[in-house]
Length: 165
Image 1: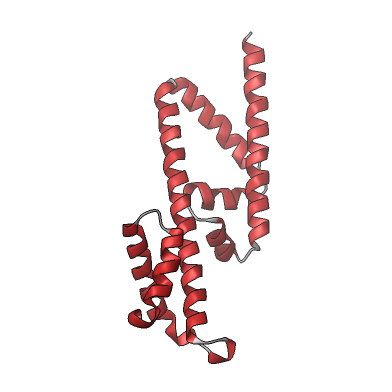
Image 2 (image 1 turned 60 degrees about the vertical axis):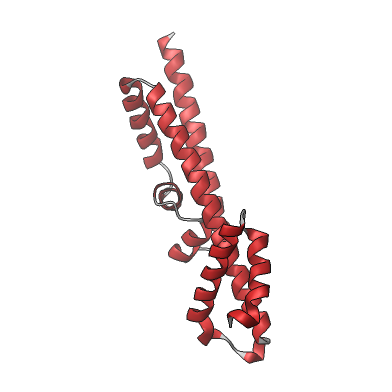
């Protein structure tokens, strides 16, 4: 299989990878995945090369999105930790309490998808599959939930500053 489809998988892997090492890892991952999914091949829907190309492309896109999600989570974590170090404990405790209160007021679906996305680190596609919910709906719940939280937290902050002055 590797001899026959190696150049195709390598070409696709190089498209999605940042380095040769990443492309090699991705190619190996694709072939392992193809080995496990070989039983899904049905010649009525195309030849073997088309099957390999489609499965490889999907697997590489999943890897790419997962890596992007992981990187954005690392950046967000670093930003949060830097912010927490800069704040005082009393302010942080109060801010966390206010954030929890506002988070609790979100509708169930928004709260659920935000927990799966932010806390558990799932991609939107993984959340969609996990909840059997259309991908567009997952994205809408995340967008609306974050927008609602941002709006409520901004208002709370303005109210707190207004009452102190």
